[in-house]
Length: 328
Ligand code: NAI
Image (tube, rainbow, N blue to C red; front, side):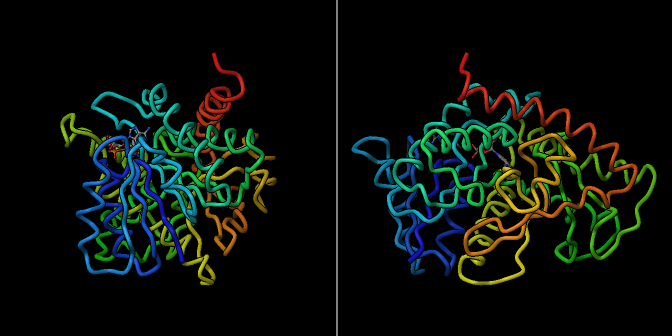
């Protein structure tokens, strides 16, 4: 029996993500938590003729506790999204507290669950989640992930578009660093199958991947950021976790993890000076099995981009950690 919980289930991401989870043969029980609207979303989804049972929960009457109890995987797309002109870091003041409180619930009611954090700024909200779990003595670094899959999905799509290829899904592209602007570093030189894109075309492609979120924010004219593509990306990530849990091998996703706690992470920490970093991570039944240290194989151009990413990440990570360990 697999129980999945979506926290922020009534939102732009939460609703389509909950729909995709309801359609998954790997989910038996789906709990939808939000501060508004979740019983309605749950009732709507519950009429779909797939096996997962669905129930909606609100904060009243111990809703968070009931939603999280027995959870195997908790996905968190709760919080406010960006409007035009905002960076992901501008969301910190509101979303940091939301993520802290939800992860506190995880620590209390389902400390062994996989936790996938979508709420931005991911570079900071994942360190917040880690510190909350540490505070409660239940932190398992193999089970905490920042969802950066949308950067991977965009890399595949935009690379295929530059090359005029019709099927973006054939590309496997390591996207490392973090999840905001120039902390997102697609390592095109290590793509498989190999891609040959140089000069201005390469620079434009990398910028488009790094700032792809802005395209959506602008196109939606103040009505939010990526929701449907994010729901797809979030589902792809959770599906990969559930497949790994069910015994499938060879599953690798780019994701933002706590380096000291995952095999291979120490080498990346030594090279970057960072505790958190996104890189290709092999998933197994207990979560992150190992993180690939591919940074040494990056091209010189990419190594330049990485230096910029390291600086931004260091600031974002410290901000997240301090929010819990040294609150202002
Ligand atoms: P939205 O505003 O449509 O939905 C957010 C939902 O969270 C709302 O239903 C709201 O009621 C709920 N919520 C607020 N406080 C809550 C709490 N304390 N507990 C439970 N639920 C709560 O926003 P949207 O577009 O769904 O985005 C959600 C988050 O995902 C934003 O922070 C956004 O920046 C982030 N995001 C992350 C991406 C990534 O690649 N990791 C990509 C796109 C968005």
